[in-house]
Image 1 (cartoon, rainbow, N blue to C red):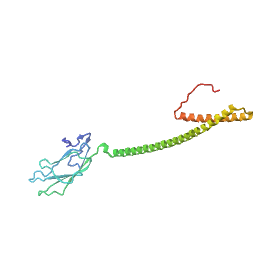
Image 2 (cartoon, rainbow, N blue to C red):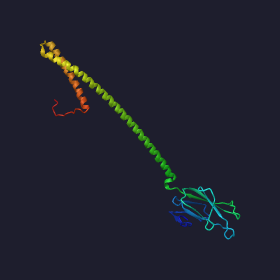
Image 3 (cartoon, rainbow, N blue to C red):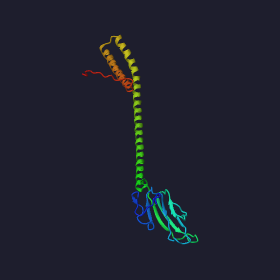
Length: 239
């Protein structure tokens, strides 16, 4: 009987037949994981004798000690058995109480739930492998991204160092250029020079102004890159 419901030969329980033949002739029964509470009635063919023998039983795989079934209602009852394969062993006692050497056996199989089936375990292993692979892939990508970020940061630091160097050089160049242009312009205004000298002074002045303009452009570009100045766009005729 399952959950106090008597099961006969051919009876369907949860869409499957538990007993295909009588229990006396059955040496194996298969139950689902939610059919793990059941009772098996025991009986002996020695009825009518004055000294009724005791019935001993044990469920190998669950217990190792022999137990005596109640004499008034010999049966064995099991509750919430775990999925697995068990062997129910039954034997009688002799008139003097000595256990008989003859043992009747019946195999009881309780199937695991679907999520513990072998195919489910294979799926779990595959999922675990995929998860581990995905974690390793993410960690590898994270390391690659960190290395790329580090490389970009180093490149940016190198570029900043270069720009700072050019900026400092530009500052250093503008001061002497200013000191060259100021007295040069004073010289050109204060005296009368011959044509050749005047042409040479103007050449010096033109090149010094061009160099100063280039230095100022470098400084302006550096200020714009730092966000201190903004480009003002205007519309005009390039020609």
